[in-house]
Image 1 (tube, rainbow, N blue to C red):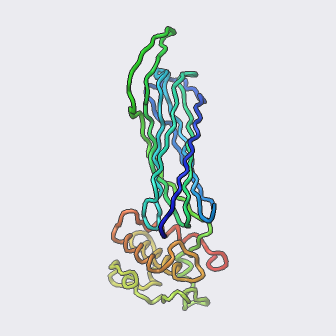
Image 2: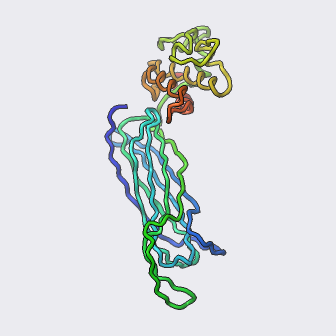
Image 3: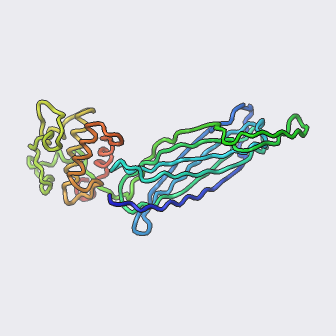
Length: 289
């Protein structure tokens, strides 16, 4: 993908509500739930990934009057290149009112990232619960003013489960099974126009040294199971998808596929064969479906 112009729009919506009450008071502040949702829409000639992070922070009544901050850091990575597009930060704050007690605070934080080109993007990150200010505590029915300073004290941290977003939703890709069953040895040769033949040597084609004895591209598509066989199967399908003029594959050229597969074989960080597995299952109406 070319140079990426980015516009980050982060709008924080804070809902400070006492929505639940526990029958038993816990002693420590913590997250009870952290969720992230994201989708991609077409906007202004490009694409926009919109995300929402929803957190529920439990604060016991003993923390009456304390102020808290919920902060997030979200990383957006291009799965095709393995490059981090940007890191987005945001925060919301609330004060423990203690009614009812103990209390669960619902915080919703949302934003968007403008992306001008199609592809697959992975969102990862973390959310932190911090104690940030002084308190005035009410204890046993009598008013007792107490002050303390504990700015930025970490109460809890949660890693966000990675979420993958595709921009747009009409990318194409045919499965290894499709390419295996449509060769020049069958009634319809779907390989025609790709520049590749079922008898081409796999290792020589991809510039790797995986198989001894050697296997050809058709044998790679026929390989079963995981490990090297999974790599061979989906690498070959990806190569043919990228090479065929009627398939709008996320990797635009065979050379991009070859370089990606080499990174997978030699364990380059951020490159995983499951990326190609996902690409190869997009389908192509009228061609491989």
